Image 1 (cartoon, rainbow, N blue to C red):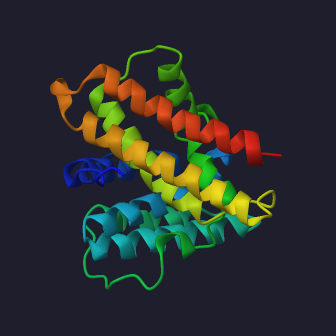
Image 2 (image 1 turned 180 degrees about the vertical axis):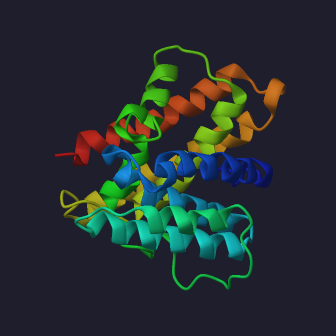
Image 3 (image 1 turned 135 degrees about the vertical axis):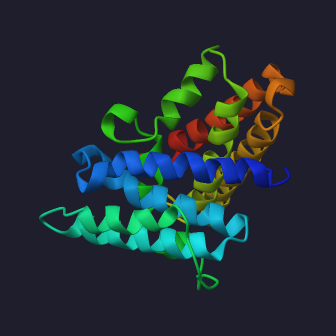
Length: 225
């Protein structure tokens, strides 16, 4: 097992993903491809808040996710209320401990969990492309590795809760859990190594990214239709 991502790395991810969410929302006029990414990204922020003991952030992020869930179901796709709710993320106040797990909020499902992996050009966070680039031998900046690791760890945790219809037997359930757990561990390792900055070991970063990719590939091979 790996230690959780360093708190400083998670706090940096809060800054990065608050900005990413604002960009996707585009003042309440998001691109169509971004519709499905906004809710899970808000819940990622809620997860970061929970990790750092920031109940105010958790509460505000869940509000954004709930507003996004409503907007995606609305025929008009009115994201103006979502953008308005997101303004509270800049300096969240108050908030009480969340009832239930983060992944249980705002109707999150497996499709939502996977949305951040899509290409940026299609409204995602480009995570899969970034992972594949490193697997193919490309360089990875420690700061980028740190953010990728924090994001991937939370998404791995979410994934564990949403086995798809191809998971039918106890053995299947065990595999799904193992792939999710393996992804979580290597993601935390990536975030921890990336947090070392200039002292980060490139081989360790690459190994961790390849570990994340391996978990994804194995899971897709077994359970993706």
